[in-house]
Image (cartoon, rainbow, N blue to C red; front, side, top):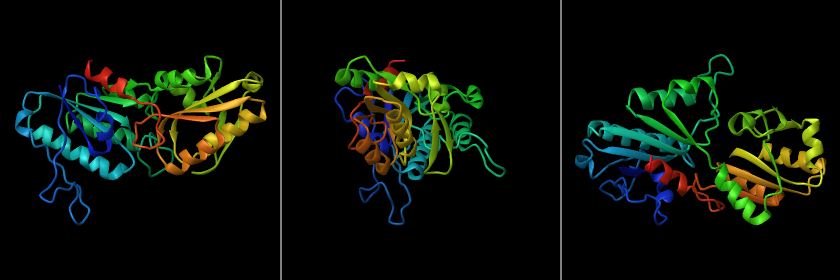
Length: 289
């Protein structure tokens, strides 16, 4: 199999052994040695395109920190693969952009997450899409597409247990987290893009007292949800509170979480200097599938 990392996923294949025995093909540059034209348009090139005919290819992509430019590069690469007649193309999203826009919640909206997946499958002929902790896991519409889910939770738990042992309470910050992980959580009401209200069930309130609580969440954007969850845990007597997060989307939210929580465990699905949990095992798992 050939592995092609997009620009925003290049950091995931720099570690020794990240691709196993598989060949890594990096996208090329334009005549000026850059990935952008002077007007800001994205440039994409696969120098080894002639070698792709009849090959199985896995494209590795992270949808942040530049979701829109990243999607343009991904589509250009997939079009090159289609034109080159690669026999079997798969995509691994370490972080899927627009994942929170996974339904139609108001008149005039569209399900952006499904639209993107539908285009990848039906236009670019992607045979399978691998997703690390996508926000829409468990939604009914996902059953229509060839999706495989990869969980970073075992890696996050391993890191936390190394530091704190096994005796901590796992907690989801909302019902969506419970849908994705099966871990019980609080009831969340979102007031706007920055503010949320939390209310924990009585049994969870009692369970927190005197315990180390590990809050498991998929996205860290503004940090509003994690801040409210932290307040809930301390209100009901948690001894200390950890954060186990898959995707560090915004630096501001990461900074807020680090200031409050005893420790933030964050994967490198998105290139962040604060990332301390490596998802290389998930990439190797996919390559060996």
